[in-house]
Every structure is written in C-alpha cells, then in structure tokens.
Amino acid sequence: MHFSFKIIFYVIFLINSILCYDPPKRAGHDSVIINNRLLVLAGEKNQSSYTYELFYLDLSMSFDNTNLPWTLIPDGNLPINNRFSTAIVGLDNSTIFQIGGFIINKDTLDYDFSKQVYTYDYSTSKWATPSIIGDNVPPRQQIRGVIDNSGIIYIFGGVNATNLTALTGTRYNDMNTLDTSSLTWRTLSISENLPFPCCDYSASLLPNGIIVYIGGQEDSGLTYYVLVKMKSIKLFDTKKLEWSSMNATGDDVDSRWLFSSVLTSDGYIIIFGGCSYYYFSVSPNLAILDTNKSPYEWSIPSNSKVNSPPFIYGHSSNLYFNYMIILFGYNADDQIYNSQVYIYDTTSNKWVTSFNPPVSTTTSTSTSISTRTSSSTSTRTSTHTSANTLTTSTKKSSKGLAIGLGLGISAVVVISGIFIIIFISRRKKRILRISGNQ
Image 1 (cartoon, rainbow, N blue to C red):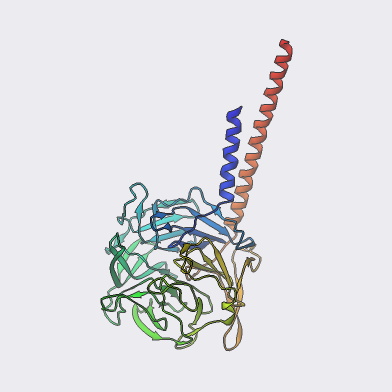
Image 2: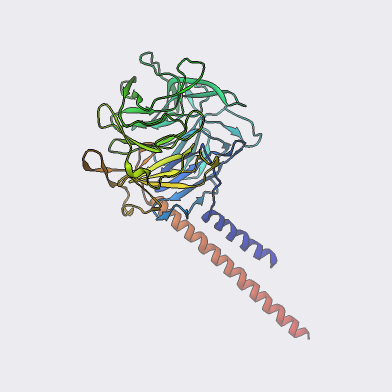
C-alpha cells in the first residue's frame, strides 16, 4: 500500500510541476505565439549553462507580471542546447522553425553545427531535424528571420562563429531564404546596393513586402566592428529581390544591438532595450519608427519613460493585440540574468503590470482595435503578431489544453480515490482478521 501512495504522490507532483512551472532566468532565447500561447524556447542561464525546456503563457487568461502562470510542456524539450538562434512559426500556425544559433549537443556538450534547422510540431509536441536541400548555407548565429505569405523565410547576414572560445567569427551580408514547403535553402544572387555585413539587428516584414532592418553590429571594413546608426535603415524588397537604404528622421535613438522589436499591423515598429558596443545601457529604452511616413520617422513616447523597465538586452518581444510582451534578458545595470516579464500597452503608450485579453477569444479568429497618437489620433484594426509577422490565433488549442488538464486532474482524483478505497477496504479486512483471531 505504501507503493500506491508513492504513485499518487508522483502523479500529483508531476501535474503540479507542469501547472506551476518556474522557468530559470535566461537570455538569448526565442519566443513565438501559437493559438493564444506565448511559447519560450532555448537560451542561456549563464555563459556556461543553457536551457532546453519549452513552456508558455496562456494569453487567453488574465495575469499580472508578478504572478505569472507559466506552464511546462513536458514532451517539448529541445533536442539540443541553443541560444541566439531565430524561431519562426510556419503558415500552418503549428510548426516552429528554429534556425541557426550557438548549437550544443546535449550529450557531449560540444558545439555541433551539423544541423541548422530544427522543427517543432505544436499539434503533436514532437521535435524533428528535417532534411534540407538546396544551397549550402554556412552556420549562422545572431540572426533574425521573417516569413512571407508564401512561406518563404528570409535570413540576412549574421555571424559564422569560427572561434568558439571567444565566440567570434565572420559576419555576412548575404540573403538566404528557406522555403518551408519544399524545405529548400537558397542563397540569393544579388550584387547591387549590398549592405555591409551585419548581425544582431531587428527585422520586420511590412505588408508591402519590404523587410526593414534596424541597428545591430556592422563590419564596415575597419579593424573593429561598429554599431549601425538607428536612422540608417536597410530595406530589402522581397518582390523585386533588391536592396535599398533610407535615412530616417525624427528623434535621436542610440545605436544598439541585442535589442527586440515588434511590428504592428498599422505600420509602427516598436523597439525596446539593447545595449551599447561595450554592453552599457542605451537611451531611450523604447522608441517607435513610423513606416507610414516617407522617410520613416522615429519618436519617443513621453509616457513610455514612466515606470519603464530596467535596461535589458538579449531578451525577446512579441505583440499580442495591443500588448507588447517582453521576456527575460540580461540586466545591463545590475549585471544579472532576468526572469521578469514586462508589458507595454501600445494603445496608451504606457507600461502596465496587468495583462487582460483585450476581447473575447471565443471566436476562431482574434482581432483587435489599436489606436496610437502621433500628429493626430486614428483608429486602426490589428491582428496579433509573433516574431514581427502577422499571425492568426485560435482558441481550439487552449480549450483542448483545458479539457486535457481537466481530464488529467479528474483521472488523478479518480485513481487516488480508488487507491484510498482499496486501502480502506484492505485495512478493514485486516482489522476483521485480527479481531477474529483474538
């Protein structure tokens, strides 16, 4: 009977650990949104310790950033340790493509770049290493990818680390694409208006097919790398496969790398955090680039400075309706890894501590109304975005999770009840036998 109680204890412990997961601090991770879930994967806990768990926040429920209901996906562990990769959700809104990064074999703890693409099937909770055909693309780290409406992922430049002790190597200025349908790599043949080799930038794909690249580290031919000026914008036309550039106007924004950005459907790119070349804090912490104007224009919302989070880098950001959700990262001032989540309301341009689903998510498609103030106030319709690309969110998976968890907990209760009944029954028989023998 002692064994029966052990089973009950371990089952309850497992469910509790899943529902009350406390993720470790991290930086250099990825985050994406699928079906009202904000999933977090990969990253480093410190310079010699890495993470491989897959967990999420349920965005169909309210929460505050001091009491976060993280949930661990027990079958979702990554097959590798990785950091500073890029993760993109496919057009099926189910497949996560994790590309590049500092990949480490979990068994040997050695760097292993033999595979550059790993996929996660959200519906089955299975990881795979698909066979990729096409051009030979060297390993890349410190990159950002975007996906277009035809399922083509675009990845610009990055670093190919050749010194894995100092984590230094060659920077690139090529454009590589991955066709998520045919699983084919292609290095585009472009010779005109090529930008300098660059990494640690932000990438946002506008509805007109233009990818906007902001900031990062650049190899301009000097003996050292420089940070890109934030008003020097790189533009790539995915329809014409051509490069161009633009000098943005507006407020001054410090050059930075290891920062994050989100793209709203009304054409605003919001950047947050990052650090200087020597890992110091930058100013402002948050800024907005208006791509509706020509040239683009930077602005710093005055409200964004009130209750602003600390200066962090190596974090991630995702946009869900009017909320910019910022995850983890490294605190530049306190020199510590961060486990916090920060929430920025893009409607009011204010930092908030509570998250509330903006509208009912009972329908299959989530939409939101977002307003922003620039020279005038206008109202625009927006769908939530993940990794700077617009996606559609559904409620089915969250409902399925609730049903599954309900059934699982019910099963534990039933099993526990059965064991208790058996225990009581056997104990009664034992007492009767003892009484009969006296």
